[in-house]
Length: 347
Image (cartoon, helix red, strand yellow):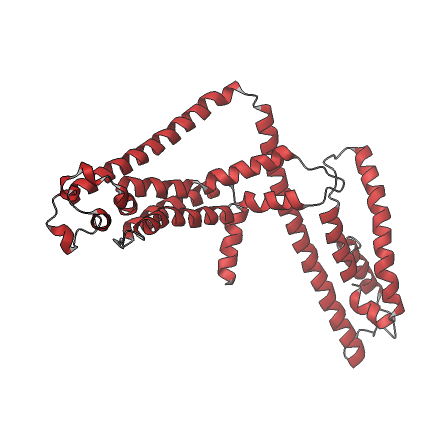
């Protein structure tokens, strides 16, 4: 399970080329799955259409959902859309760019599946054989209403005893395969023409908006990565300080070793200096309540996208006021519970 989670995080945190590679792998996997799939038409008037259309459209839905899950822009888009506005306004253009990018890549494998099934023709023959006009084929023109429908439903089953000697079965099958391949090639031609048209018309529009949306989309991704890395570094040092405090407290209680206990000597100057350096490295965030409030503040009020001096001074003043309130709420209850509890929760 951990290995699967690591692979999933690797795919979500990598570059655009990796996402394109995943889409290609899904497309190849869809072709491989279809070629190895054992297609068995039920050959019943009521169930042929359900089975044929299900094989044609249910796997593309699964492939589409897999493409959405593996695309890093999908999670980024949802987080950016649902986050509180705070001190940073949401950019609808960036959200649209992420949405379009996610849908484009997720649709690649499902479209390949549908085109392959149409060019093969088995699903189309199974789904629509019951709806063929029997007057066009001499072998079915003399049969009664229900018998004709029943016989047409067995067109996809060439091993059936009723269809072995029926000369019109192949004619109906070829007729439906022609329509299926015509639809498949038409969809493929339409998509190629649409891509060529988009490429041709792209220079006619302003490229500035596209560059801006792509830049801020990449910025959101990079910002989240750097924030996660900073949180990991802080958590690592926070855990180190907690473990060191635990061993120092145990050393003082057991009266073992040359180091003075916290109750007797209050620690050496070197230990005090190390304590101050540890707190400075932790950026003054030294207990659980402060960490939780900091993460809540990051989610509710992200800093503005302006690194100018005046803006930074205003942001610093705003954060200092909010942080003073956070420290007051998280520090005074700890003092009321006694000195021991403060030592355990404050590193």
